[in-house]
Length: 145
Image (cartoon, rainbow, N blue to C red; front, side):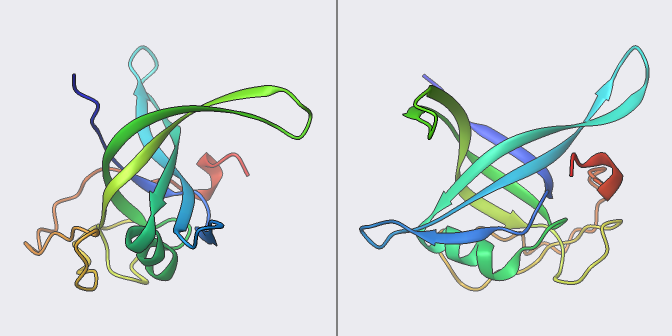
């Protein structure tokens, strides 16, 4: 069976690094990915919850901010938990196996190029220098906050 997800989009808020009781690093972030309504030709966005662990999580928290363009390669995970109100809640999220930084730190949201992350086996970086426009461009007025 295949469970693979590849997304390119922008972070909707600054990632926040947390530590588990066992000391593992974890970061949760939401990725805004462009979508088009065929019958109207309107540009919209889909929002996907993502989670990354350990060194990948630490690099995301260190180098990425709201609006950063990234490529996420991962798999879907479904889990359930009981929220504070006592209700059972189901979550489907992308577990990021690797995250590629697709622009340099401080670069505007209107262009894309590769960002060479620090040497880390959990973070992939495209070293080709390809400046191809990926067409993903979320602006503040497209975000729900």
